[in-house]
Length: 368
Image (cartoon, rainbow, N blue to C red; front, side, top):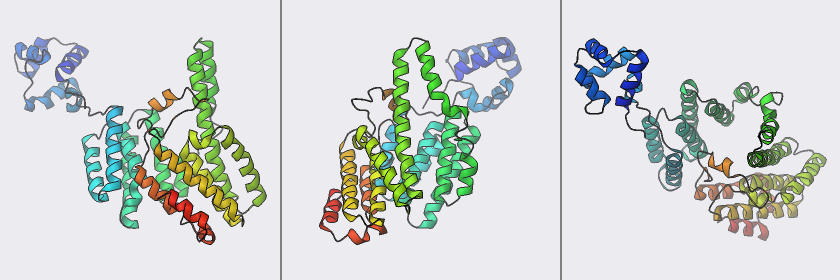
């Protein structure tokens, strides 16, 4: 958290107001020497004088004090990691109460509050009972509203819109999602065509390194979106065998060419899991078991690595992307909770007919 900057601010606001130390002292009923000592950090104004000083400069007391509780990216990562681990090991309500205390302490550190929303959204299912889980989702929405109302950074506000939409989806409010996201991510918005413009600008400016890095980041993100979009597409058309088979054939090639199991284990495992469900529904049990094995192996390998996000021999310029993330390369949930969730995924009704198979038991053991 930043220290108080009252001396610096008194100088700044006094000069902005265009008054001398003597004029300011006369107005406040103190000596010029007192004002000089304030500005030179030799003493502090009496606490009862702070409202009068703030009014004189037409600012808030917090502005005058320079009180702006902020956390560095490293501090946010550390707190998130600690809370995520505690959620996997301790009583949910105890950890949640601690996280609420941190929200109150850093109520104007909006990048931190966004990550608290992410933390709650990834752990709310650990709360006891559906009613309490819904209360947590409502708290995420309330915190998001606070961020939107007070934060002046468009990027953070857009992130909050997407977070709130995800919460609305969990709450079973599709109309709210459509209303809030429909315009923001419309394919007709010029913002969605900006990648190429920026890359060309870097090239024109003679900065080939920046152009290369941004092109890699753009390809990487669009690759993840392609596979994630395919998962949704398969869900929509799971009753249409020909459409599913063609989609799986195409995405399988993308997965192989880009080594998706290594490049992004989470996206890869979700895709293999969805394919396994579809293959079970189509009566292709052997293929379903094969996909579930890949699903389990990808998760196991992902959790055994030190970094959740990373590049490879082709994507060598992703560091600026990962460095810019508030959570860096760490996972949004503790490894224990991820493994527990992966095991629960094997309880899907579609897998009922293959549960007794030896191959299925081996898959379960991979996630134990």
